[in-house]
Image 1 (cartoon, rainbow, N blue to C red):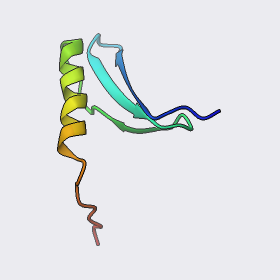
Image 2: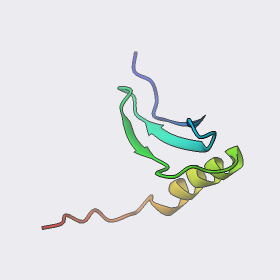
Image 3: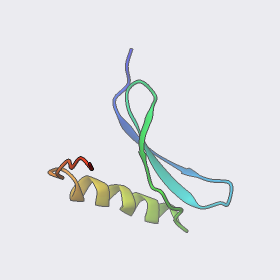
Length: 62
């Protein structure tokens, strides 16, 4: 049974907080790209993505 897409928050090897977006087949399709010093920072990063990109354009580089 497929799962719903989800954001996962985790600590990396340097004890920084990161997030990743995992889709129903288990593939990671996006991540924070940077570590945060607090879990709350990672949570704010997720909220920023949710808020900032709902209508983002798709541009193909030539």
